Amino acid sequence: MSLVEQARLLRKQWQQLLPANDDTKIIDCEDLVDNWDIGIDYAVNDIRKFDGQVYRCVQAHTSQDGWEPSQTPALWAIKHTKNKDNPKPYVQPTGAHDAYMMDEVVLFDDAVYISKVNNNAYSPVDYPANWQKQGE
View 1 (spheres, rainbow, N blue to C red):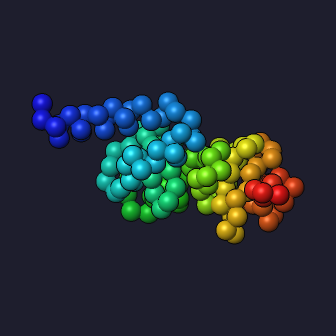
View 2 (cartoon, rainbow, N blue to C red):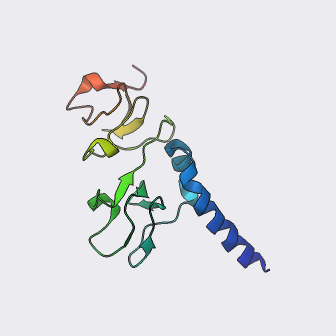
View 3 (cartoon, rainbow, N blue to C red):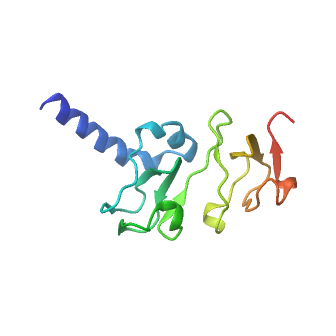
């Protein structure tokens, strides 16, 4: 088996193992996550990057233009992190499936905020009591 074939096999194995990790670990390794693309058959639990965020497929489908993960919460769930050194930009949750949990961090208005509650569906501006600004 050539080196390229071995690398492709390892990448495929990596992609299969990825969903078994927690969101923070996945985001910490996001450089190894494949980008979302059009015309791909996605299975439940496939992990992909799109527009600076990491998503998990929640409904099998063939991707198409207009079905980007950020536009289709019925197909994709955004991943959140607890790593204060690698916060992802705040994204307004659309339901319980993508609300922020306790200790998850976001980048909001150039500051890092830590969720103080589970099922946090409000931004640091909309409900400041649910968030702690890092360093305060």
